[in-house]
Length: 112
Image (cartoon, rainbow, N blue to C red; front, side):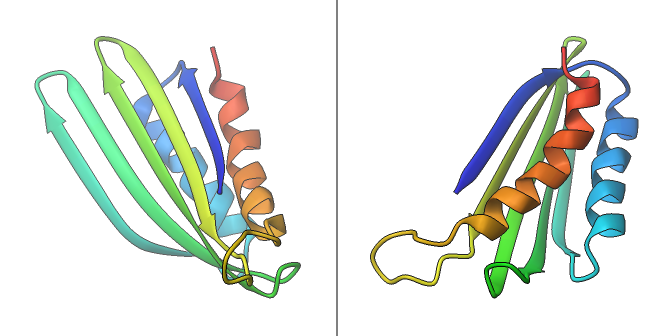
């Protein structure tokens, strides 16, 4: 599992679209598996779950992206999982790290 969290600045919808574009336009096997959006008052939350095939690892990996905006602050959490071929320990995390790097390079431009 690989993880990235950061406080961001910018437009919520723009950040959400930038991450989606980064994933879908830079990985031929990527798919949006499901999504959820919630808002109440001035708080918005978007959750996206993506999956792709990792050619390096020879397996599928998933990425969960959560974007939260409240009181003028934006927070992002990105967690990848899957990809290991071992039964009791993780020995192959190349695909997870690569998938995470695709998103973090996009989010870093919005980082506070």
